[in-house]
Each structure stands twice: as structure tokens, then as C-alpha cells.
Image (cartoon, rainbow, N blue to C red; front, side):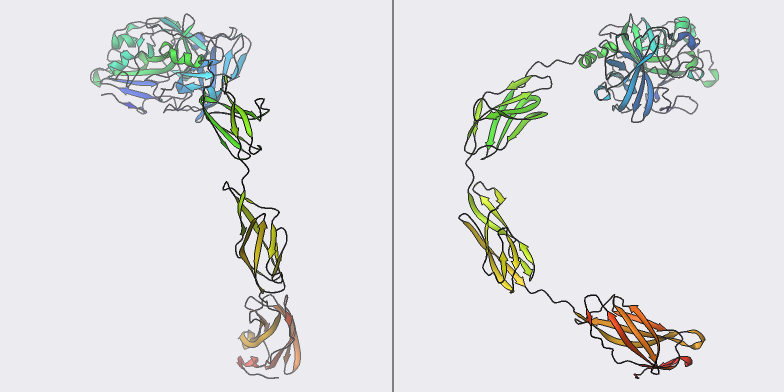
Length: 633
């Protein structure tokens, strides 16, 4: 049974998916399981001997191999690439610019080309770059190819590389390059160089990936695309370590110390045959093969094959995608002008809307005038197939000539023959109406009226120059702008608007007497009460209530008092009434006696005080902690 998953056992070391230091292409592990075989697709190692032996000397001229720094919505990563022979596109792997579902998520990036004296760095035009449309995030299936567009063409010293359009390179020694993390076959990338140093070397394409996928019971055109991926292994010269020979009888012991293997960060890098781009680095596969029970397994690869005894790697076969590549690098040149159809006009007395269709997106323009010389124009630069242009400020009852023009994105232009439209006669006023309808105002106030005209073409507009009148000037007058002012009498008056031979007298203005507000304030009551104090004495509380002449409480008023005991003045006080119209004064530890309060002043905003103090008094037995109520003077 074959299964695909995104995880491996805890004993398997593999690179993280998203390294934040631009060290590798984004990657996750694909696991393919067979009866006795487990294949882990992931970034792998790079060379049999010391990686420094494969470093491309900095004294070499530019070779068209690019170091890519790519910022995606999920982080920034390093990949490798190849300058196309059109000098403005760069080939790389789709998984460098797309997520695990195949969605293109590149937001910015640069391509750097290393030469004898400097790097030449060119930004990537992300809006015009793309991954293969069939790439779905599963790079073992195929379609792992992307084409990036640079914002400007590469300079003359950077060579463009032609790409393969046909041919089968299986069995061919190939040249590989990349900027990935260098290391050794036996120990992996942990002992090698970081991302950013260009290396090169050779390998041999052993077979199409179909050979391994069929052995793993994967289905062609479902789990993989036939002939879309070249595979090769990391032979070390030992026939017992030859992975393709071990599994499939395709024997080749390798190229010695010059043999290299795809590494993390080499993703998207080139594989050349005779200077032509033949493959694009896609993935590496480490293998575990178990023959017999665990007790019989050895480490010499006769019963167990693991990552120290050879790996597979896969390159996207460029020739498989030649037609797609050509469609991107050499887009079809449009030489055909738009085809204009379905021209129509819709006119009023001062405007006309002209519409038409084209068979491709194109701009919209109308030349027009009262003769075939036109003289006026209106246009819209938007690329559309349904066109609409409105002409305004036209003369009524007038014949106009016009021609429409559309220009496509390739600057191909098409124009219609001369045509005509006639504007209509001006609409006539058929009725007027007044708003608001039947309003009511109080004396000494105003009301604005508006007259709206309805025309023969069902249009409406507010009228100016209307003659306004009121049936009773004593109730309300109205000026030439429709502003009515209440007169000296309350009642109803009819408002009339006249314009030409049209009139409206349907509105009645009601003028009412404004309600009279409160004008005076008075002291409603003065009451006495007590509350506990020290030494068994009590505090005397004097509460005064104010009301207005409409019997409403008066808040915020200032009340001043004089307080007398046994007919003798003892103190004064000032307070502010609360929202309920009351204010309370407190005489602490009041002595026994007969108390009386005199109101000396009341100040209330907008109200006058009548100056009177209600009869009041209190016989107070404060020292005996008791009291008796009564009026005294």
C-alpha cells in the first residue's frame, strides 16, 4: 500500500520547513511507503568530497546562474535559478514561489548574478511572475517549474541560457549548479557551507522518476506525470551503494569526486547538457530499504539501504514544459484591431449616451459635432468590451454627427463610419408642487417652502423664479424665495406658488401661539427636621422648596436666609436648589428655643421672585434630644 504524508518518525532528521535566515527553499518532507521501502522526498546533501572543491571561482565571469532571495507571505527564502535567453526571465522551481497548495505567494525578491568583480542584483517583477498553472504543491508529481520576470533586462555581460525543447537526457552526464547548503554524502549538510556560495559538478540522469513511482505502485497521470522528472542518485564509486542498481538494475557507480547531489537551497537551480538548460532542481529523496527481519540486517547495504548508501534526486524535465515556457517567454503578438459592433444611441434634449461592443478589451472614444468635421470628443481609457460614453451640454432639437473609436492593449485601433443622432426638444413644464405639505409653525418663527416642477419627459427639478403668495398676510407673509414668516395673528393661510401657467395652492400653513413659559419663582414651603448630633444634641435641618408659577420645581436657584432663635438673629446661609427644587440648611447641635427662618433673597435664571417668606417656625428642644413641631413667630 502506498501512502503520502507530511511527517516522518522522530528518529529521522530533516530540515525545518521555514528557515528564517534565507538558507533554503521552503520545503516539507513527502513520505512514500512501499512494502519494504520508505522514500523521504526532501532537500539532501551535495558532494562526495570536500564541498570547497566544487565552489565556482569568483574570478569566473557571469554564468547566468542566479542566487534568488524570495520573500513570500510566509517568510523569506533562498533558491537558485537560471537566466533565460530572452535576458528578462529567470527559471526556478514552483515550490520556491508557491505554497503547499500551489498558490502563488511571492511578494518581492531579487536575482543576483555573480561575476569576476561583482554581483549584479536585479529586482523581480512579482506581478508578472508565475508558477506553472498545474502545480498543486506536490512536487513529486511534477509541474515544479516557475518563470520569474525581472524588472529590467539583464546586462550584456550576463549570458542568457537556451532551454531544451525536446530530447531525452536519460543516460547523459549533466552539469549541475546551485547556491544551496553544501555538505557531504555521508554526513549531510550540517558540516558544509551556508546558502549563498555557488557550486557546480556533474551527475548522470539514471532514469525518469516513472521507474521509481511505478515500483512504489503510484499511478501515472494521477500521482505523477510521465516523463516529467529526471532522477539520479549520489553514487560514491561503490557498486553496493548504487541506489538505481540496487533497486532497478540500472547500474552506474558514479563520476568519482566530481559527482554532486542536489542540496537544500539548490531548488530551482540549473542542470545543463551542452550549455542548454535541460533540468531544474526540484527535490531529493533518501531511502530506507529493509530486507528480512531486523536481526539479519547489516549496515553494508546488502539487507538495508539508507541515506549513507545513496539517494535519489529529481529534476523537472524542461522539455516536457517547452510549449508552456514558449508561451510565457514569447507571448503571441496581437496584430488585429478590435471589431466594433452594436452601436446605439439614447438622446435627451441636452445629452446623448452612445454604447457599443468590441470583441476584445479596448478603450472608448467618441468624436462628435454638428458636422462631419466633429470638433468635440469624449473618451475613457479603461479596457472594456462593453463601451458607454455620455455626451453632455448638447443643443436641443439638433442633428449631431459622430464616430466611435476603440484601441486595444497592443495599440491596434478601429473606428466606426460616420453616424448621426438627434437631440430631442426641451421638455415642457406640466405641473408644480410645494413642499413641505401643510406645516405648522409658532408665532415669531419662519418656514421655508420649495417648488418642484415636473416636465413632459417625467424629469423633475427645483424651480427658481417662482411667484409666492399667502392668502392672509396677518397670519403669514412669504417672500420671493419661498420663506414664510408668521404674522401678528394665529390661524391658517394658504400658500400659493405660480410659475408660468402652472400653479399649486394645495399647501396650508398653520400659525399657532407659542406656549408661555414660567416667569416667576416663589417659596413653596419651609420645613424643619432633625438628625443626630454630639452630646445627645441634635442638628436642626431647615428645608426650603421653590416652585415656578407653572408649579414646576426650580433647580439651580440661589437661596439666602437669616435664622432667628427666640426672636434674635443667630446666623445666615446661602444654598443652591437641587433638581427637585429644594435646598437644606443645617444648624449643628441646635440649642432649645423657638426658631424662625427669613428668606432674604432668591435668584433664579429668567424668573422673578415675589419677595415673600411663608409663615414658619419651630419650637426646638435640642438639648433634650427631642422636639415638638409648631409655628411660632
